[in-house]
Amino acid sequence: MKREKLGGELMKLSGYEAYLVDVAEEICFYLIKSGAKAEDAKDIAQDILVKILASDIVLPADKMRAWLYRTAIRTYIDKYRRDKRYHEILQKAFFTEETWIKFDDKTYEPLSQCLLSLDQKYRLPLDLFYFQDLTVREIAELLHYSVSKVKINLMRGRKALRQKLEKEGYTYEDFI
Image (spheres, rainbow, N blue to C red):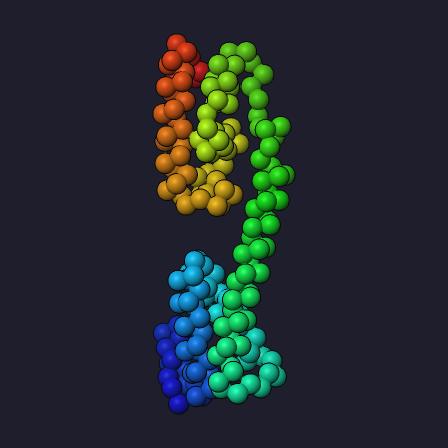
């Protein structure tokens, strides 16, 4: 019997269960190495463990490992496809130019024009942050960027916007 520490408590595992836990840890490491987020890899490894323990599947030991890996990889691919499809739906539904807030007041026309002339990688985060009132974390999740990438794009976008406005003869105070 192998002892596993789980949540601060020692747990007795049979040889079969200990083997499955070891393979699940390998799978988790493999998925992370393959590009999965650590949380996703742990969830997938846990799901396949529960699946094999809850099912009546009887496999020889030499085939068990291959089945676990194959199931984990398929689960990861399915999750990736679902996430990608969800992102595409969000992009189509919410991030079109028609859904952006347009300034009705003519005094904001130069700001609006300069903002629209920015590269999309700066324009979109600026719009979401300042005009749609999303947080940096929410923007990162929606655009599938890291929080630091969103912060950098916001900083660079503000700088580019300021330069374009100054080139047109405006300052920040003109739009407060």
